Image: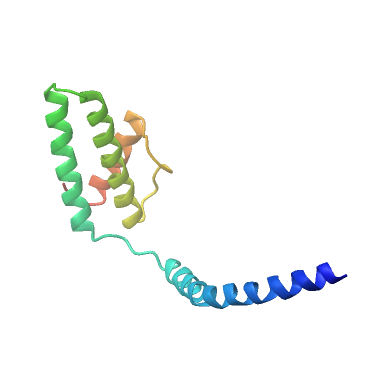
Length: 120
């Protein structure tokens, strides 16, 4: 019985103090969660600039050689596809869930963006 009392005397104050320090963090998380419901996208102009830049890099890497060419090519392709999908989300177009995309999926996404009026 005394062991239980001892544990309560030791643990309860520590738990209360710990919780008191967590309250501001919890409030911040709750407020931030409410803001997350209103997702914002980067400006479409910025996304188009990123697509242009990444497309140029893809052409350079495909044309050249160099060390770790395959890794760089994969990284740039994934970044390009991420931005493609972000553009689709910003323009509320249907799109695949996430990269990597097949060649056909990438072409369909690019065609949909061009049809929507996006130029890069």
